[in-house]
Length: 233
Image 1 (cartoon, helix red, strand yellow):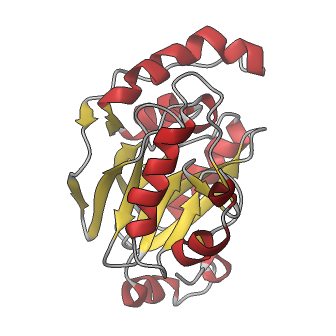
Image 2 (image 1 turned 120 degrees about the vertical axis):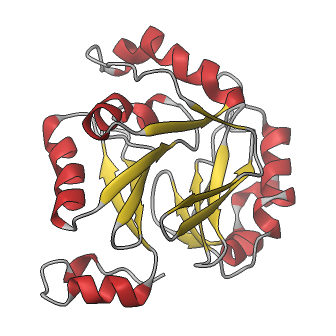
């Protein structure tokens, strides 16, 4: 998937968006260097794993949405560890969004206020209760955006990824990283479960599928099938 962020100030930017279909915009937020994503079709958008916490990060996210005249339609969570939910309250209140999360990760979400101060976020404001509960296997449609929900536990009990088959990318959260994989030493983590998610779900996707991870750079399914560190476990 080509990146077009460098063209955002060009007068033909809107035409590029129309001709290029679905676009994924990445933001890297908070001290954990978490990747937040906006998926858009040039008109509608969804926000995935908002990690924006301070005012500058919030303005960076909303500025992009406003500048490109996008209408946010939903907040999607891959999972609910603290680095991925720091901006949930803000974006829900800002845009009055439906809030999607897998049923098995509700306890992960509700536990964040109990430990946020330990990680340096005493001002963490929890979001409202999610109103769209996922079970895996759903096909979500927002404007021209179509995302299949794949259940991929192991990093945490209710982890999901959002696969856009038509455009050949997956918003992968913390299942796969470039050369590595999600940690399993946090509550609810399990290495054998994560391995099944990787080998039986992620590695079944086409090798050319672009993987947008929760931290770090993009990779592809084929690259990780050949060289990911998970093969040593």
